[in-house]
Image 1 (tube, rainbow, N blue to C red):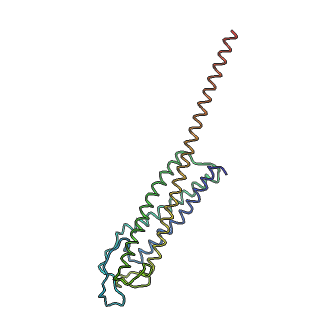
Image 2: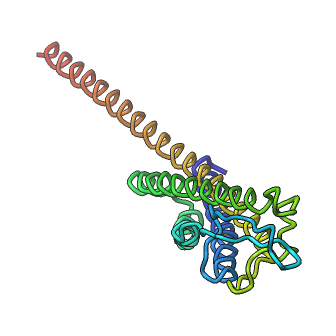
Image 3: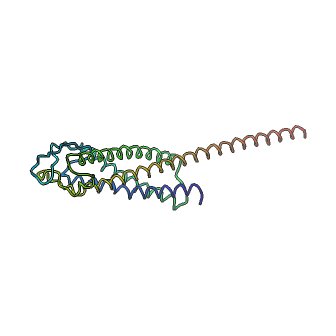
Length: 233
């Protein structure tokens, strides 16, 4: 298989993987947002009430994280899903035809890949950092919860909030897996785009060199013909 086709095949594989991983981001975050009654737990703060009359100590004085943190994660997941789907179809056409995209298409793919990679990295930091802050709150020494995942089995939020906190750990573990997997996919796609642009640059330089040598050869042939004509006269 030629190097060009191998690069195209690698791009198709990465776009398909990106399409699948995008569901691991926006689906669990959306479900968690619904279970938390529209509240975003990323970067949430609060205080534990050790004097609670409930069987378990409750988390009170809650200040939920910015809704934009969760909403943007869902938005990025959906955008990456649509982008990956479109690119999968587009690049697959080149693969089936045994051709490759133009230099302009390769450059636009490079620009899109860089932008998506930056957005995914910032989103990954938001999700991982925000969830780490939530776990730090849940495992506070006053909570009686040793590990963050144990919060799934403990009712620690006031019942009047109508929040189901039984699956938050699993949901955000899946979301973190999806977002970091997506970021790595698009880093690879960016590198593949750079390789394609480099190949186009080398090909253009080679064609210029061949054209230059051809012109020099033609000049020599023309000079030899004129010299032979002068001798015959």
